[in-house]
Length: 397
Image (cartoon, rainbow, N blue to C red; front, side, top):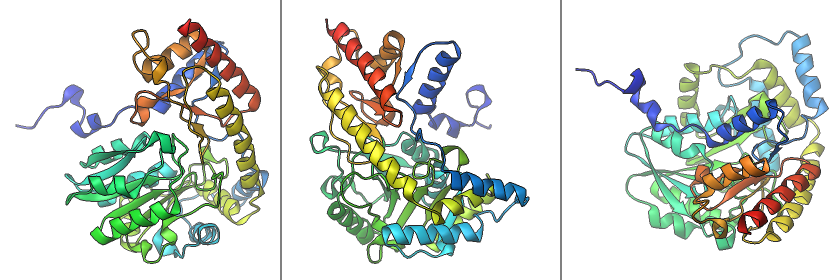
C-alpha cells in the first residue's frame, strides 16, 4: 500500500524549512504596510539601483522584441561574457560549454547539488552557513556534515577543520567566501589546501562566489583559477550582488562540461531558460563599465566601519570585523538568559519592542548571533543601531 504523508504533501518537501530570511522580510513588510516605522537590517540585497547602462540594455532588448524563449542554458553571448569576466577578474579559463545561466545564484546551487549528490552522500558545510545549503542537501537525500569555524579568527574556514570531517561518503565540500552571514574570507593558502584535499579524494568543491567582488583587503580570488581545479570545482556565481540586480534573477554556474550538461537537463524540465530581457541586461553588466562595483565596495567599507564601531560600543555585544560581503554577525550570548533564551527570541523582542529587523543566527546554524545587513543608508544604520543600543541597555537594566 502506498505510503501516505501529512496533508497529502510529498515527504521530500518536509525536508525543506521555510527560509528564515524570507520569513523576516515578510514580517517587516507586514509591519510597514500597517504604518509601523521599521528599521530593516534583514535584506541580503544591495540598496543601490541597478546601473543605468544595464537598464538601458534591457530597454533595448524590449524595443528589439527580444522576448521569446532562448536556449535553455542561456544565450551564447551571455555565456561568453560570463567566461570573459570571470577570466579577467579571477584568472580562470572557462569555455561556454562549461557555463550555464540559471534563474539566480540560488538556482545554480540547487542545480549543482541535484546534479551530483546522491542519497546517502555527505556534504561538508561550514558553520555559519548560508541558510539554503542544508535544505538543498537534504532535498537531494544527502547528509550535511557541519564544520565549525573559529569565531575568534573571524569565522575563517581552515583546511584542518575540513579534513577532520572527511569520510568515505563525502561527495562535496561547500565553501562560501566571502561568507553570508559572517563576512569571513577564506585565505588563498587555506583555499589551496582545501582544494588539494578535495582533488586527492575525487570530491567536488562547490565555491559560492556571489559576494566575490566585495572583499575589503586584497583582491578577489577564485579557487577555480588554480591549476587542474576545473576538474572538480563547481562555481556558483551571480549578478545579483555585484551589479545590484537581485530582481533580475540571473546566476551562472561554471563546471566540468559533463556537470553543466546534467544541470542543463534538469533545468530543461524546471524553469527552462532565464528571462530573455534579463540576459541581455546581464551581457551589458559584464561587458560594460565596472565603475559601479568599486563604488559600492567603498560605500560598503564605510558602512562596515561605522557598524562595527557602533556594535562594539554596546555592552554585551562582541563583533568580529567582516572581511567581505555586507553583513555583520555579532555575538549576543552575553545578553541571553531566562527572558531571551536564544537569538530567535532576541530578534523577535527586538522587532516587537524596538522595531528593528535582524535575522536570528538559527538561520545560519548558530543560536547566539544575529545577522545585520548594512546594505542600507548610513542614516538608517544610525537609526537602527541607536534603537538596538537603547533596547539592550533597557533590557539589561
